[in-house]
Length: 365
Image 1 (cartoon, rainbow, N blue to C red):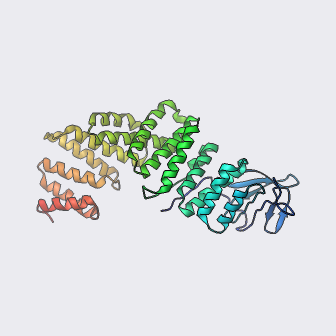
Image 2 (cartoon, rainbow, N blue to C red):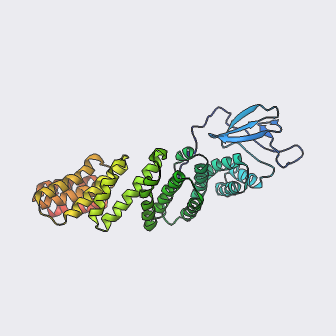
Image 3 (cartoon, rainbow, N blue to C red):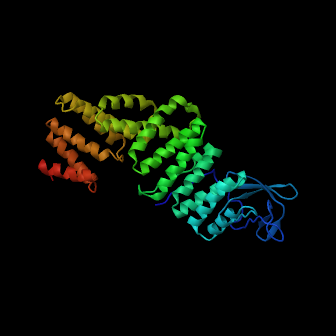
């Protein structure tokens, strides 16, 4: 399992590939000392001001502003920041999990805004290399609080194992952040993130609870202030609630929800899910009907999923249900052709095995 993190905008590669930045004083460490060393050239009494777009901004003793790109070979040490020293040493040695621990401690303990930002950037990198999802989450929460637009660029792949211990830690981290966040837009972003963690954990009750909260958030938050990722999360939450209605066989509620969410369904994955849930809801509402016109419309509903999104997770099952409807319409020849297509195109999936049984039952090959 791996995940990628892109916390900030494109990082310049103008500087040399290797250099060392150390903050120390002549004759040993000094509290508050910020001295800069690039290669073998020391620059004393540097004032580090900020981290911005992946770069460290500082002024030298003469007051001249300079910028240094934060790359892996860069090293920072501050006299009164022992946690940073440990983290940077671990980072330089490739001890990624130890680095995550050190940067998280730095993020929690330091009072320097620039150092919090620096530690968050390092956390993303060390978390990626150590599969420490909790480190990436800590970095995301910090960046979201500082700059929601920068946080949008963080792309995480969640652990594959729903029992992964770092998922549980991440859930707790986000819950804590949600409890103290006052900004409604940031609250929505955190809720989307928390719902995605619950999905990765297969925690359906929490997914549905948060989906319900997200479905109401549009009414409390101006959509103009929400980034596309958050809006997509709200739509995802609404579709999860509709899926729950389908599973409970409350088809009128599902159909009502589908109509309400339709205007916000713009992403392909949501469009595919919407079509599938529509077909399932219509089929459920129709019950055991034998009306040919209704059955033909149901077949069309399922085929829309296949025609528009042939790689959708629901494509094979949509074809399987189409074949069953064609049998109800007394068209075994057409049904056989559909089953043969499934057996061929989804040979290594459960729907392929089901289709092969139907092919044999209808006397096909």
